[in-house]
Length: 354
Image (cartoon, rainbow, N blue to C red):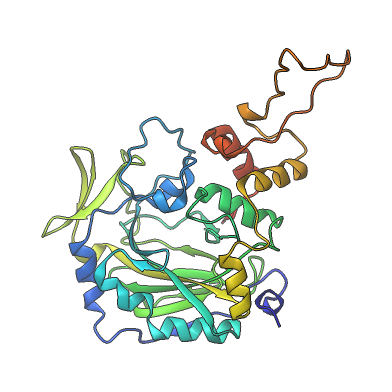
């Protein structure tokens, strides 16, 4: 039976709780303190660059930023594309507790670890929405597509034949106030579960389908600095965690105040043959095919300058009076157009208020 067939309608594969996770959990906080600075994960959602480039240090001064995405959460990539970015993350990438849970959930031994990253959250109110994670597809993934495009692909349901199953383990190393993790294993309209033990535990889940959110972190009424931008960073200065923006210090916190979660992601395939085919791109889609499929599903033209009718050259046949040339499907260059980003994100979103 395929992994997709195991997933209940409107829900996800049943998650697995791991408790305890590591023999020396303090090492995770030590690694986090030593390996900043950390960037805003909202950078995945702002421009046409590949999602894997979000941490490359570019400033976003000329990028149109969607309202409401700047927040008190900061990210660090410790492993990408199946390779450790941080040497100490090699053992985390292949952690048996995560691999075994993914195998059990999916009924498959073809588990291919891909990512390890940390999220660091400053004291703040809970997220006003739940969400599912950024998915990947055969031919279109984090290496060649922006996060907002991948999210729209997942939410649209138009690319399920090309979807790659990704299992996510979220673990916590936080002893501060609150910061609980809430998730909906039976679908967003069903009952949720609140995970409250945030020290050295993990929930291994089908997070591309399972809605989840972080509740309030820190004391009631705590708010992040109002002057943060998409380029704000979080780093540890030897004594405190400090949020900066350029040369400006915006806030500082004691170590215990910063909520730390560590996430692990792996691609899972039905069989060795399915993995080989996917890695060769068999049955995959291109960016151009993705945009064409979106264009067919929308009841309006794709919002991109590149989708305007082509201007006929000197050898072109004259147009019939009263008829316009059909707009062409935009290509990869359209991904830099914020109007396309906003149009697709408004129609197909993985975020649910409340």
